[in-house]
View 1 (cartoon, rainbow, N blue to C red):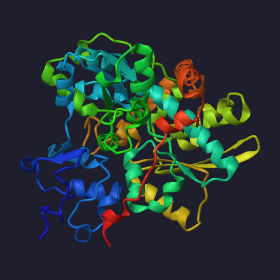
View 2 (view 1 turned 180 degrees about the vertical axis):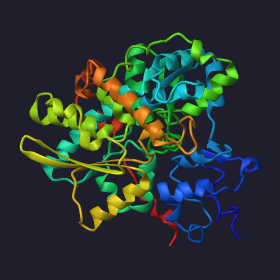
View 3 (view 1 turned 90 degrees about the vertical axis):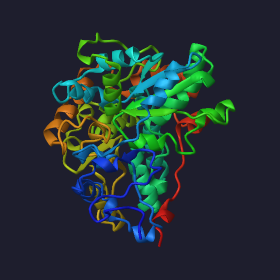
View 4 (view 1 turned 45 degrees about the horizontal axis):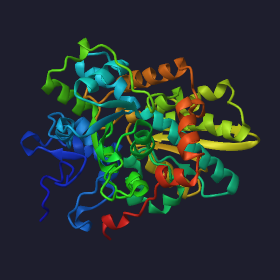
Length: 456
């Protein structure tokens, strides 16, 4: 007999799942979580509990929580641990904010879907006790520098293609579990949060004269799977660089919803907050970085910088609005030519759509050079930790969030990652250049097969 109850109705969740939890008292056995996990996320239909040793397989995307009408399933809260860190006089608590939070957070406080509330978000974190507030968009630019360089290397040196993006931790675990043969095709670059952590505890700490051992890094993100990602064994680049065996790159993850809950408990009046700015260093980013939150955004940002790396000049106007990779179609395709080199691109969101694309690639029906995959519909703007403005989330709400990020990119003075002065500074003074030995040590990672989790 299974230790999990009602498995014909709902998805099983392990007690030690680092990303999501279930409150049994609130569960009404409606089946919404199983339907979402089987049809949109696909995972629920791709394994058999009787073959896994009665162990649930989860990629931690949190979409089950997004569709749960009673909040029986929620993210695993970490904000109390962050509060405890803030209360410690010797700690320096540094928040880093993902692009999609600033177009979702306002909805928890009555703002219209997609309201851009960056200034109030930063002010809220300061009100809660942050010592520094930095922008993960900075490391989105860093990710593009490394990922575009890797793509150019793969294309010119005939290394395994297509190159799949690696920003989405749920997608990474899905590949490791169900398609381990594709691991060589995964970009080795860490996600922006994966890069932000070690860069803060090495370069930023040195620039600021801070003892890295005092830093508690907190990622504010729309993504529940980041709670799993930061606890991966290999996410300790700073520890290796600094010789501090027990140091983690990123210490805690709180979601958009968690922040809203924490603010409510502390009595922070969001709508009356005066806008605040990010701290200098790792607080400046390009327009390319902010569209990371949208399906197609990583692809578009990478195309801009890959063009520059090959041609030595910024791309033409068309590269700043790659319409074929925009929108909410499940699988989108585009083609570009750089210096006579044709590149075929694909963008997919929703793991069920990714499964379809992978199956087509593996049977030889399609061929691509670069593929962006995001687990959540709409991209990170639809992450498992975003406000539940509607249950289930609607495309209208996703569209408003997507539009807000594209609008900020279009209005940005700097629209390419390689033009970000902060990125130039961190390479000049620390990483040297993309794919340098130090960059590979701190900004790149490895993956491993989890196929054994499926049993026979």
